[in-house]
Image (cartoon, rainbow, N blue to C red; front, top):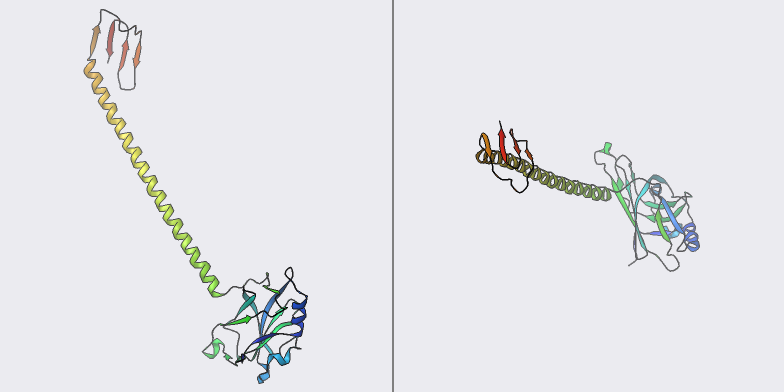
Length: 241
């Protein structure tokens, strides 16, 4: 059963496709919508048109997906655009002429002021035919994006932010552990310093100790940093208080 609602190449579009090849593409710039003056028609009978019968709106193409030589073209009619029935649609290139023309089931597009407005996404599937496999592209100057794309990128950004926060939290935790370890080492050094001082006080009490023989040729050692000075010569160990 043939499709009731479809798009087809206009004569102008067919000429573009015939001239196109792998290194040349057809750049679509906008989707146009019309009410056909309230008289629906079959697109195949109006391929000579370069404009819709009665255009009521034009919107930028938000996305083009190409798979297996077929293309899916999407565009969104904003909430503030409406007040008409949609009977005809089309796709234009940079020349402003219709490359594809199609029909629609006549749905009414309201505006918010009417109490039932909202965005309307139109999706057109284009199937390549023999000798009509030209690459279809979106105009690179168009800056709009579909909701699905925005949500996808937004969720990916949130995930990246969360990962960065987790990594920063781990880094801070590791730094805190390092600081705690350093503080412990400092405390250990202080404890060892006190123990060393006490040990020296025990070995060398206040006063002088005379030795009758040298100790391994030691000529002089100076101890410092513990609050006392110890002068050592071959015969006398003397603690200075």
